[in-house]
Image (tube, rainbow, N blue to C red; front, side, top):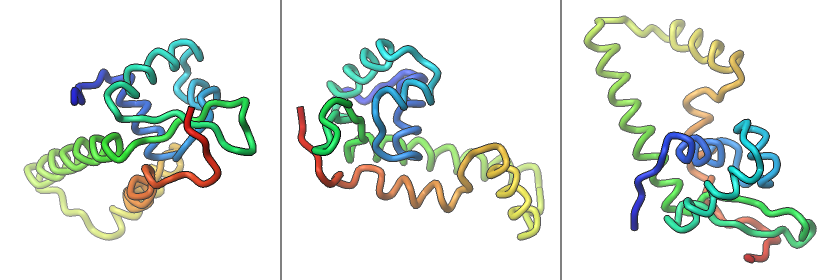
Length: 137
């Protein structure tokens, strides 16, 4: 399986890891891309077995997108490596990370509309769980 992805494709995977399964129209809006662009991107991600499309039983008109376990794992590998690199930078800079500093950073992250680290990993953990009431196309 080819798991090389572009930056735009990776952003899509991260959004699905963070927000869970989403309607394709909502995901296109969140990523600020045209629906046709998202469709082509997800065609490629689906061929790589990183996302799957489905229809909810109660919403047959909309196409929904979700991470596969392989997609979730790819995001996890990249995010863990990012965390290791950031930790090394902080250690090299000899920055003392007091609990007060960590709490402040979490508040800044939340104020910017992002998820704090612990919550992000909780969402990531369940991002490829089976979705109830779905039919695969």
